[in-house]
Image 1 (cartoon, rainbow, N blue to C red):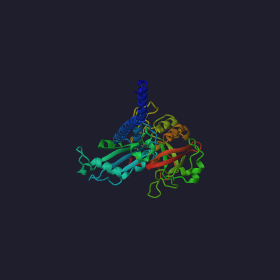
Image 2 (cartoon, rainbow, N blue to C red):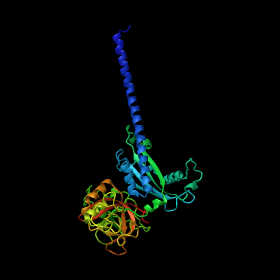
Image 3 (spheres, one colour):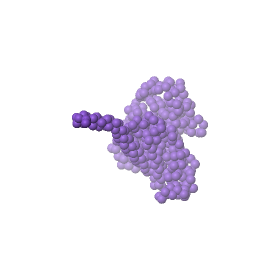
Amino acid sequence: MMPQSTQHKASRGQSLVEVALFFPIFIILLAGVVEVSNIIVTQNRVTSAARAATRFAADGGQDEGMVTVVLNTVTQTLETSPDVWDVWSIRGTVNANGDGFEPGTWQFAHIYGISATTRFSDVNELEIQAQVLQELQTDEYGNSSQPTIAGGLQIVGTYAIHDIDSILGLNALPQYASVNSARELSVMRITGKTLNATAGCTAFPIAIPQGVRSVDQPQYDSIAALLDNSPNPLPGYNSFPAHTANKDLYWDGQDDAEEGDLFLVYGGVGNDKYSWLRWNEYILNPPATTLNNSLSWPGDSADYTDHGDNGTAPGYSHAVRGFLEAGDPTNQEMRKGDWVAASSASIGDVTSILNEHITQKRVLRLIIWDNAGAAAPPYKITNFAAFRVIGFNSSQNFLLLEFIRKDESCGQ
């Protein structure tokens, strides 16, 4: 018979072996539970963010504001870097049969992110459009056999993808991409009341001449080391693979600008110069203060509240910061064909805000102008377009801008 002490040691040794064998399995199971919980929680947050952005758009909000709503919804719980997000805005009008969109009304615009999410390459616009139609054609009972219920609807939507930090390191495995990204499609109809609210545009106070053409390599190289912002100097010309030289910012169907094209514009007075703007001529603050307020995120072109500024606007008992058309202060809806006053402030007055926009990689809706030969302000709005600021130089008074898209979501 084995001595009792020997039996006890054997039993203890057996328990240690069992623990050693089971413990890694337990850790993996625990990590799996945490991983699944993380995926579910992240998906719920992305769903909430997409729905909030769509609700904002349905109430009259534009693309820049939709991005702000998405990021504000998750700012305390998820990373907001454009490296881990890709967000699209969706707009369109369904045809009378409910089986497609009216020609020219469907818009699927990439409004945030740098196309780096694990599922970005899988995004198929036609599939998204079909999914939107299917949702619109489905009634409250799950029946989609009568597509005419979607006929004539004007809709907005948000499609969002967010990469999930993997506890188990699954991010490195492409076969697990489907569980390493949370994605959500949210669509809502626009009511007639909302359409009135979206008639005018909001914008940031920079007017870009429509005749400017995208930079070529000699132009780019000449300013690459002259930026006031970081990175300084710029990365090489070939670091912008989507850029094409000598593309036209004026959309006439020939050599039109496309997403990723870079434009170099100099400030001053003239048909080929950009200008800083002021939304109305009745605010009496210093020009630098007014421009700083208007250029700060998220902009103030639709702000008519009383901030205690100097001056009095027609129809108000106080000064307003929002848009009042130059020559017609009764017009508060910024549209193509309207006139905007110039600001006498300079690029040196807003360097910190420009750096902030660059750091955050923000997309800004700017005004495209053409005065049909006139070289002096005010500036006539011919179009709106979305840009990112890539760099600037205050002494030589230039901006380097990345074209994102022509924007016809408002102001028509």
